[in-house]
Length: 158
Image (cartoon, rainbow, N blue to C red):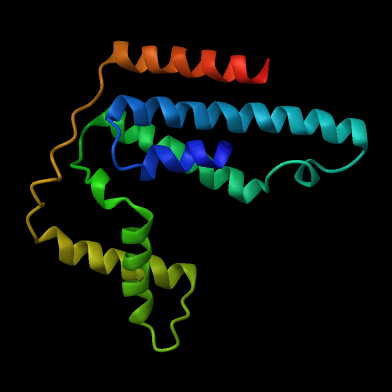
């Protein structure tokens, strides 16, 4: 459930920006609430938190996904192609980057360098029509999303 909220906020193709923000906020809240509950349960059982909840690295990655959606929606400074952020397109892009290496094995540093080079080449191209300039959500919408997210998570955990 937690992973679905985090990934849906970024990868879902047919929802509007406010839905993405609310879903990302729910993801962040569920991660934090789940971690708190797991810590408590681990103390009772005398085990480590990672034995009863997702790995710390996975949790940080999911939080980064949620945070990036919220930051993009809040800033409204860069054009975003939400339609291009589907899993199939991202896998295809990763495959394109990986194919540049003879053994198809790359380190994280190799990935970032190859990705940066590809993004630089893409900067010279015009953005497709579907990539409209992002418009920042209003403060009132942001607060409303936060309230709805908190209420939904609180009701789920009650």
